[in-house]
Image 1 (cartoon, rainbow, N blue to C red):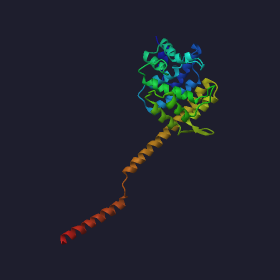
Image 2: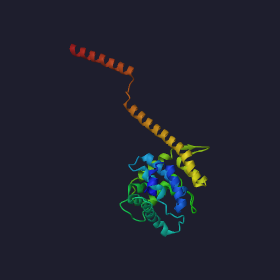
Image 3: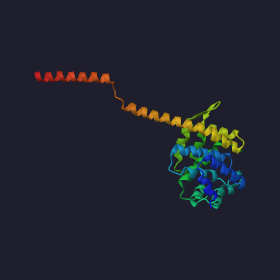
Image 4: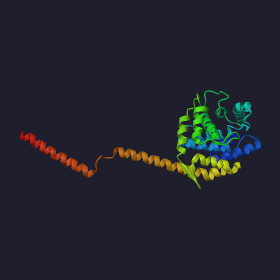
Length: 269
């Protein structure tokens, strides 16, 4: 008999995974809100950019479920320290394997689970960075460049995350891409704007899947094409002959004439 874990892992489309998680949250009262969806989109974009050797389906599923026992009470320190481990235990009950649950437990470092899984490092980066982009009761959301600084020099200070530098490069890459509607803004800011202006979770998922994703994927493809062409032009420029064919023929003819003169001079000497 298939478990819930089998069901959601067999579903390869992210939007369908989101729908499955949404109905699970309604039935089981697990944590699933717009912030989870936003972070899943950042994970999707990061995996497409970085081409990391991980199972994309596995990571996206973990991203949707790793915060399942999170609470919205920032004052409950015990819950902040324990929700990832409690979530991992709950996911085990749903049929997920030991490694999947370990990855979800390592969304933060409170359980001190070691050695950390590769997928956990991806989730940690996106969970912390994505959270900083969003407004909270005590502060407004940070700009992407500000969030990167805090991520590197505060949150992960003295901690090793194997994908931190790749993630910084990824965010800087996205910040160069302008997504236009009425006003152009960078990709991440557009994503946050859609999040903030869409009240219902299901409508946010729809806007993400049918409006944001096709547009950003196309813009990224165009940006990558421009980068590739620029690199090729640079290589071709480096290998391009210094002189045109006509100039080269004239130089070679002149050199031949000089050679004849020198040979005649040597003979006469």
